[in-house]
Length: 481
View 1: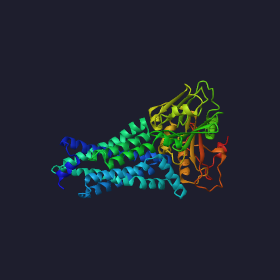
View 2 (view 1 turned 90 degrees about the horizontal axis):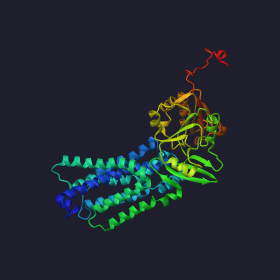
View 3 (view 1 turned 90 degrees about the vertical axis):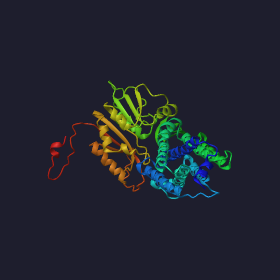
View 4 (view 1 turned 135 degrees about the vertical axis):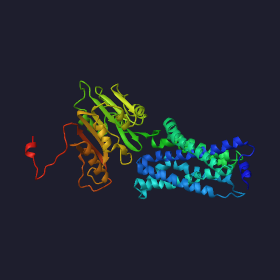
């Protein structure tokens, strides 16, 4: 089959300008779907495998490598009279839709996670690897063949120019998939609706490539797109009590025995009951940091990093609170579903990243609560470094109190809890460590055991460098009070 015949078979009856438009539209949309699906896969898997760089890197690898093999396979494809390039493109898109349909569904990811736990797969890296192998590798490999297959419809006389244009438009599609799908779609219409748009785009590609617009492949593509709508509908998400799924959190509410729980990415974040009860660690933090300054005159300045449902100090209408959290939806969710009333005028919400907030203000505080650590999966790695803790220290007034809440091994049975302890103490000397309910459990050897572990620090600029007593140099008799 000659090049001219192949080109005409794709866009019969359409002028050259329209032909180029359709070809580059296919390239842009394919690039958009691949990048958007990658980000959606990362976002959908966060509640089960976490947002650490190690899990994200596996998903990125599961996209880049199959994409490379797809480019190679598409360039080696040899059309036949019965299975030409057009049919190959349509077949690839339909099969990719078939894999992405369950792969981007929160419901399927949820069921896969708990099924793998039952068969003994417990490590998060194993979970994300299994997920990537099942649902990402094949569709990306198939969609990666689009560019070399489409290139058959361009003239060969200016190969360098055509290649440049193809890569340009493909990169534009990837750019839109990375930016538009996250900053615009996920942020404004939610993750579930963004997923359905991807399926409609893929169905649209099948329609563009099909000679007959009411053919079997078109009907299959439309049916798969509708399946994407059904699997990501509000009704489907009601099974998990999901209130909202946005760029940062999958938010659900659990009402149980008069207690209203805020669940973020499958991790309990906050609770407020009909009787004013809160999570035990919040009540302990209030006892340590707030009880002595309620009704202070002049009012104290308090910073809460990790707003949750804004339960910390909710009843305090005297002191001034700044709440910092990246998810702007939390305030409305908390006021509508968790708290008995709206936040008071003494409480200000700053919906932005914690480190960005700290870098933009010179304000210092009398109390700081760090409460961004919900569990092993939802661990913001950039908020457990010595550098971050030193930023926090710069915003403490003299005699200020810092309270942190981590989820870690109570008796240092894992490397994380040991390194975290060393990191905290490197920034905050003479800090006090509290395992919630005094359950240090020294005889418990279960390395999977985790508890709320709180560090409490009183800031004093005159502490000086830590010293130790030795047999050779012991001045304890001078230091004793």
